[in-house]
Image (cartoon, rainbow, N blue to C red; front, side):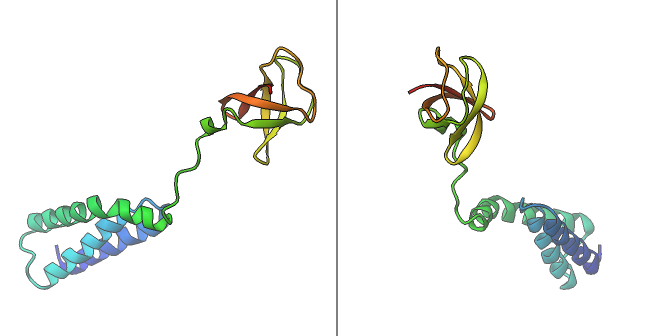
Length: 144
């Protein structure tokens, strides 16, 4: 392949990286295409099979050690979102009367949630209840 075809491939892959949401996979293949383009331009490329081999090796050698660092750097080193299971044991405020076994609304951490009354007695509006389990977007509540 000629050097300008490698350059076009590299630029197309870099453009693909800009169109995809933050995976940082195409980036390394695009850079590899541009590097192989420069190598071929300097007449060090050899036959086509060797150029494809260089492209593959350069891509993988850059991708494996650098991708995770780049993703961490771009995300600002932010921790993953807290797990929903961490809500178990917290206290929610009941927003409406909820009979035993029924579903109503409760507030926890400033957000309104569906809440199932797992207690034997009804929960009254404004009452505090303990979260015993989380299923999807539903909190299971018992009296405190």
